[in-house]
Image (tube, rainbow over all chains, first blue to last red; front, top):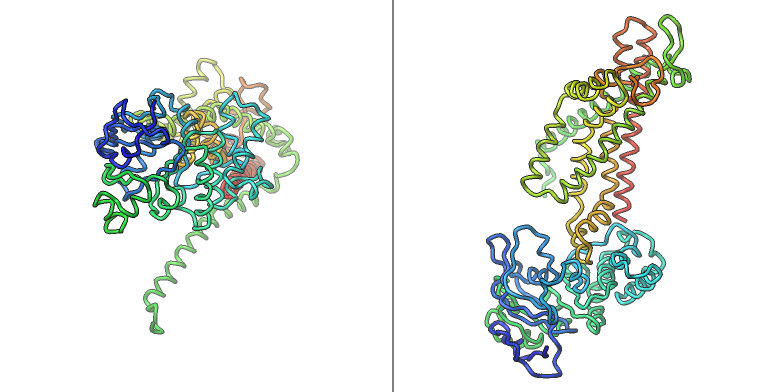
Length: 276
Length: 285
């Protein structure tokens, strides 16, 4: 497989992917390649003909008004939508060079981790929360687990705050800590991709800043796709930004380009607050 | 804002409603306390160590107790739980987690119907099902009758508590690569376990006082019932038999047995509330 051409990103809404396209060696490899994706909740079409590439080990943000399909697309990447009855996908998504739908969903979700909008620690101890994903894999030995839990909590910048209460209930820590715990939990199984669905919308600015700092660290080892309603957040953390409207990808570009000089009028209207 | 705010009419409404709701609460409380007090007053003279340790004395002799009925009730409840709890629990898990629209509707509807079957009908049903083929009354038959009566409540309360587990917890498990059943058994059920236990304890308390089905199944026994295949005494049936008897001593013992039964139910109910409160405390930090 070849690296892809960045110029495709800026024209993603009209791009068709051909096998021999793209050349620039320095550019990141695609983590996800989405082509002609349609998604339906019953008869309602939530995504319409989406084409895009998510670059490897970068942060990509999806923005757009509520109901524009950005969360639906995010949840297609780890096939979480399959748990909702009456949904249907058309089109293709590749993870690396493999068909996303060729994986068993449980294995795919260990490669593509996810953090949700509302911090949702399991009603278990802090340690058991992080160890949960590790214990699902019988090939990970018991004595490795404690090390990996510590590692993950350190990566999520939470270790110093919880190291003395690892065996207390995870519901006893603050909302911001809970969300970082959920990130640690997702990182513990060493996913290639981390999907974040408005991870900071329930948090105060200080907790938000901590999580944003964290994303800069994680992206060295992990591809990040984040859905956010906060455009400042998108501008701060993202390398690339996709703007969605009514189930369509209107524009996909470098973050700077989107916020300073968008190509499409609708993008301009949205980021300047004229609608949405 | 003027000094006459809120207007007098609203103040009056407020006082009247507060008095009415308070009065009704007191009324409910006083009914329970009156029953407990009355049982104690009428039965206190019979409440002694012998009441809990001796089997009934022959008519005309004083003394004797209901030890066989207490043991009988405990055995019946143990057997009923062994039948009703697993079926109700697993059925509730299936209903909440796996059943689709049509099957969920059918299960829920039939369960509610089963819950509405009069207890005396349940007695006759188990009489034909167990007692007739065996040719005699037994603890087994009584346990089966109470067990079947436990199923609907155990099932629906398990379902309700599982449904109350937020979707975010289920998705959290799935997103880590757990399968649906792994998520259910390692996250959803542990999250709801205190509620489920509470529901089952209250269910046990509910059938503990059932009398009608036992008349047709466990029947009664003046002695201790050996094993599970002989007729057995039980507190509700003892209360019934003693209350309709012509002997004053037995009347007093019926009051005392009623007090013991009601106190037992109160204790179960209080313990289960404590369990639920502890569960809430654990899951909210």
